[in-house]
Image (cartoon, rainbow, N blue to C red; front, top):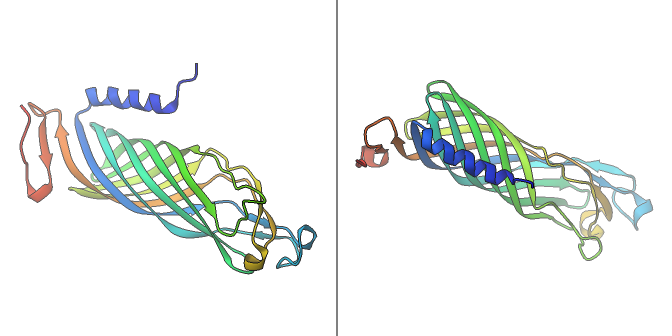
Length: 241
């Protein structure tokens, strides 16, 4: 029987909550720059009057996307586990001869990051993420001729740097998708974009992500009775005995 990765993540987080020294919960948001594969433009042998008339490779331009989410940070001295859930919006574009074709995608990303505090306030982390892709579009495609398809899920590896300063912090992350996006033929509106027939080449997506976060509250398991500390309005707001 195959055990789903998400089930393993839930078990690991549950075990960590029992043995952790400190728990932090917060929200985050930021920007990303996404890398996708090339678009191959077929010349005049593949359709009437394409522009240009010769075969051409178009490299996707990176555009700024956004991300918003929430996280928990489960600390064991200098080590920590950081599960997250993020809503991601990704953007790219192909500068075709007639008109730029914009590529967009939306997904839910669930990273499980393992980190180490090298010195206050800086930490390094690495870990997998599991994504559910809800949407992927490319402008100008005539899907009635050739349907545009994509995988609904993927797995990636993350590595990054995290800085925490009081209630606030930021992290810079590189994400490399180990799930390949396969090549596929496409048919584009030639009158508008110049390309008639094309091919999206196989690639592994990757991203640079920059996020800021707010630590809403912390629970310190070493204090008697699990003291709860909140940064809102500059103070502690109570404790559980």
